[in-house]
Length: 161
Image 1 (spheres, rainbow, N blue to C red):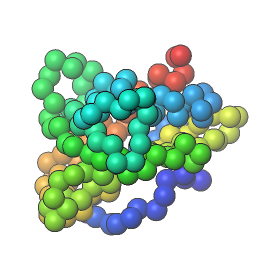
Image 2: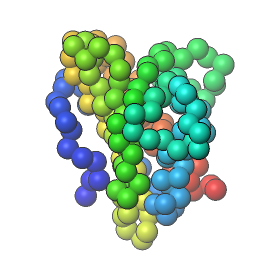
Image 3: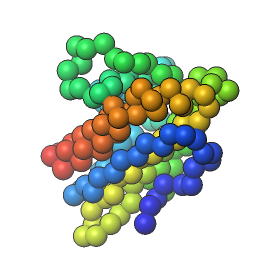
Image 4: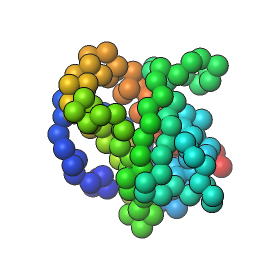
């Protein structure tokens, strides 16, 4: 059963990915919310204790399609705002800060315990507005690859350490 909340809006583009991780949920959560260690994500303003909180900003560096080579210039650098951090439910979310009349986007990431104490990681982003049609036409395949690369990378990191 999914730990992702129902989308707060519908749009022409929904991208999702998941992975079953052979590690305890609390370990995976610590990796997931350690934004300072994200190679593709850094805080706009570093937090005093490096703990993500609602209302904090993220300046993402997105490579579409994904690449481990960080010498390449990112495809885009969207500014996001963290809208939810729920350690008890193991969920975190952020939204895009582009003008909502053009592109509204909300991304959720969630963890839940599945068989044998493994952790299910799920992520979903819904996009709406006229800009969502452009994203769908031009970038949806690369974004899907990127979402799955994040799921696979989280799995790799949690299972190795």
